[in-house]
Image (tube, helix red, strand yellow):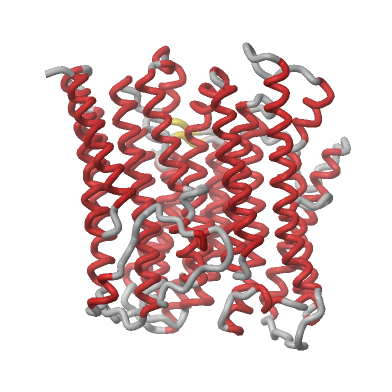
Amino acid sequence: MTVLEQLDKICPFYSCAALMPAIILSVFFGLSKNKGLKVFILAVSVLSIIAALFFNIYIFILKGAFSDYLFSYNLLEAVQAGFIFFAALNLIIFITVGNFYRDNFIQILILFLITILISVFFIASSNFIAIFVSFVLLSAGIFQIVTVLNSNTGTRQINSISEYIVKNDILRFFLVSAFSILLLFTGFSIIFGASDFKSFLQILESEKINATLLKTGIIILFAAVFSYLFLFPLQGAYIRLLKKCEPTTTCILWFLYFPAGIFLFLKLRNVFFYIADNSSFYLSISLIVAAALTLIGANLGAIKTTSMRRILSFIFMANLGMLLLALGLYGAKTIDRQTFTWFFIANLFLLLLSYLPVFTVFNFIEKKEGSDSIDNIAGLARNNKTIGTALIIILASFAGMFGTAGYLARIHIIKPFLGFLTSGNSLYEGVPAEAGNAFAYAGFALALISWAFLAVNIARIIIILVKKPHNNKTYAFPKSYYIYSIIYTLAALWIGVAGLLEIYGSDIYITGYSLFNISF
Amino acid sequence: MNIQYISIFSFIIFLIGLCGTILSRRFINILISLQFFIISALINYLGFSLFVYDLSYWDKSFVFFAIISLYLLFFIIVFYNYSKQTNIYWLDAMADISLFKTDKSDWWGDEKDDSA
């Protein structure tokens, strides 16, 4: 058997194989405090993540989709893994900036790499055993990173009240997560009672899909995802932890913890499609009400606070509300399956592209000022034109400004309604046209309100960025901050222009492929 | 013995766990309540396995791996809690980690100071 044939056996986990050398190597130096070794392990870790990102894309193009008893790896999974690797590349920079001089820096890197490895297994899993076990281990991995980042090395005893409060907030957050995981366990046990299916695909192919017990199990799974994502009104533990924790922790939660919940939902999406197709009216009403609560609650929360961390946390939650709205819109038959999945993925990437540079700059200012008040950024765009302009473009893109990446992600919740308004037909079978239309109008109104709300929140930050400051305080950002912000700004504009060209019928794909024709 | 009675019994245990998780304020109470979920799910698995699916190895494999991973998660949470002690009685006495408690300040205005 040749080496290539042997390598075939680990398909599609080449990216995991790329991460393994860094993990194994760093284990030997886990207790080291030597600066040179830290740099070496960091370099190996970064290179292994870059290699994992490359292998993930290259091998998928080369080998195509993969499926066996435990795992399934299609384009959607490849894109999700790409998201995690790209996020990991940025997160490792944040972890290094904030924790390089800590004695346990190498241990943090080990935990981080192992968590990324488990993420890939979770993304690829299709069998219930693989899904559940990898999901629990992923949560455990994230918990360990968060606790290590928020602990003082070597001190077993808590020395301050603030440290004690953070500890309790971490416990509360992850107990909610454990609660959601146990709901999942219960849901799987009930699904087992209704059938002895081992994956969601088997459920779809079965005649038992309409069994009450099976539907109960699936509803419990959805409830588990709802509580895992801390959607309104369960956001208490999430908002409190993100306000007080060590800064890098916020990004770890945004780009490792929450995507896990979204990916779990995407595994359930085909079951959701089936249920929504057969009982769309009442299901859509419940989903749109839940989306409305999350969107309005989160956006109001962001408007009423002056803490930058809370504003970003609430806006993140509002974006999760938009995903919830997409579920309602699918139930209302205004978007199709393809658009639905595209919307989820596009919004995840938009969050990543927008939050990373914004967080970097705001975190720098928070460290300088010792507080995360929004007043600290007053006049930033006047005193520091390059970073200020970059932030304004990124924030405008996030709000969905025409010609930017955000516009492409957001337009999908409005566009279908425009088509519906011109056709004027009832959207539901067995429901009077008036009722169906009224409900669709309500969904349309909610989509517009949510967009407007988000735009107001972003506009508030932009106005503070450009308003005349109380004092002419300037921040000396390192050069790397300029490069980082500009790269993301250019990415937002580049993707935006590429999308616009496609919308207006051009067949010139400046990204190399058609953005709207990616079929998941 | 009937599968219906087993399911009802399991559902009652699930509800006890749910009420306990939502209403408890103490760490240890929440942990105990979460155990009820595990027991409820295990009763489901074993009940269905005995009465509906004879000789099924699937559920046993699932339960085996799920329990190992779940208790690993619980272990690290408990370990974290008890490895970071305050030794200050009044701090421990005021500990309130109600999972789904939502104050007005959790979504309206700025956060109130916990240490006050």
